[in-house]
Image (cartoon, rainbow, N blue to C red; front, side, top):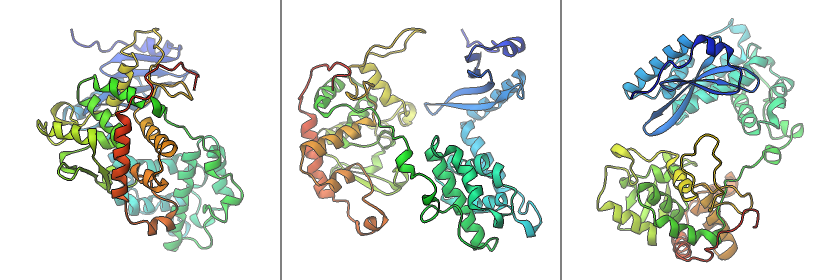
Length: 434
């Protein structure tokens, strides 16, 4: 039987008041918020990854118009085009095609400078999504306050009117907005549109009137497994089969990020020298990173190399990389969580963070590694941090830190591999009992 479509009607949409999602079929749904506002969304899969894309709010966008937008999205998918990427690319193109001058030259606005600065920076962005986010944050927060104001009249007070409402509640976003305003104003000065000091600069200026971001930003730690339970976890993991289980074990053994592992290709693997070289474009820090492959990690890729399925080390169907949720799904299954029925409560996890009681996630094993290295070994801090591809110190220190202490990291990863093979604690710990 085919999927049900057109399950909603204009009457149902108009009268819906209970918060939640109302499915229309074919991926289209209406979201009713707790405040009663209604909006449209389209859920789809592209290259094994799930996405949600907003289609506008109701009643500005009617049911019929939402269905038409879904049809357009599905046409893009049929042509192997991601609708979200297409939208971001269209936004970037719109900014590129924006009028050169919005107002008479004698009153060049901040918005004009922002768009011109964006055109200069555009080649630096990794993808259309990041480019669209850069200009979108300025449109959302800065333009309503001083977008139409002559750029040479933007003041510290105006900048603070943008930042103050979000500085404590959306600290990371606010920090990025400040940096982007500062960059635009610097561009305007170099271009001859304003003089004097930059009112958005942090050091020696806003730092005296606003709390330091690192002091107010809420740090959200990923749930991590206590290192004493790691051996038991890996023993249970090895009892499972499939690329996803192997990828998760490989990520743990190499202390790597999930995305780095899922995107690994055979061209990055040197089996003879036991080295995995991740290119900078796939690294969070933007620089190449060498990972020593020892023990079980080398064994995993060696066995997989005998029956390669395309370019990816851990492929999904048709040689596509595993999706971002695949490794997490392995842990969920190990915790006894399958597809729950509506209203059914998830069981208490077996593998969880002892401090929070939350089920562990793939990224948390990097913390497990760091806790083990810091608490049970004598390896220098910089060696442990480099194993996690963390940059060392401030920019001055980084300028002198040119090596990657690879030989020392080989010994660290050998010790880690040996520890991973050791079952220290196989007792299921009660949540809340650290």
